[in-house]
Each structure stands twice: as C-alpha cells, then as structure tokens.
Image 1 (cartoon, helix red, strand yellow):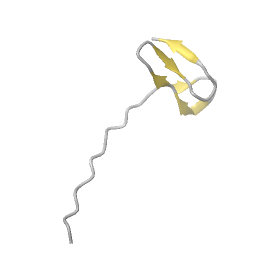
Image 2 (cartoon, rainbow, N blue to C red):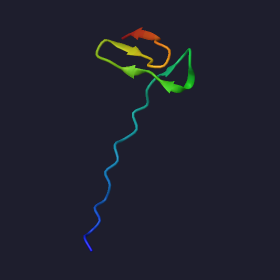
Image 3 (tube, rainbow, N blue to C red):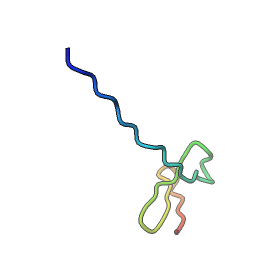
Image 4 (cartoon, rainbow, N blue to C red):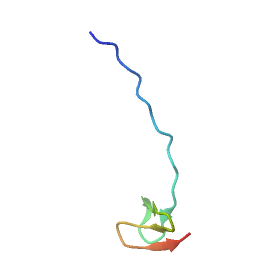
Length: 45
C-alpha cells in the first residue's frame, strides 16, 4: 500500500465577527473594507 502523507493544516486566521449577526458570522477581509456576506454590513479599514 502507498505511504500516507501527513496533512498540512493552515493556521486559523481569527477575523472580526459581525456586530449585527453575532459571534457565529465573520467579516470577509477585502483590500479596503470588511464586509458581512449574510446581512451586508460593511466597515472601511
């Protein structure tokens, strides 16, 4: 049987949570802003 390779895990990047949706929803990081895909909340960097 073939040798199993170890999985490479990326480190968890802690983002800012959405103030409208709560702790379960993170804000997406864009070049010039942070935005929530669920409710549309946006913050400028």
